[in-house]
Image (cartoon, rainbow, N blue to C red):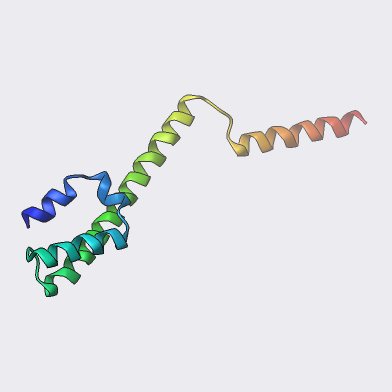
Length: 96
């Protein structure tokens, strides 16, 4: 299992690894005799699952950081913009 820890110590690499890449890596390990055939399917599933989780975690962090950056810019929201647009139309219609 040290091998598994080494692979996932790369962190982001796990998030971007495709199932095909993972299968190639595991097949290579099977050929070298480091992993037996029965373990290989479980190993592939574990790596894919961890990769998907790492990707989701990364997505969550990015969304949070983007939202924080947008909030700090003090930009109007879409709802605020729409409300102002509605009020302008209302005022313009009163002038006519």
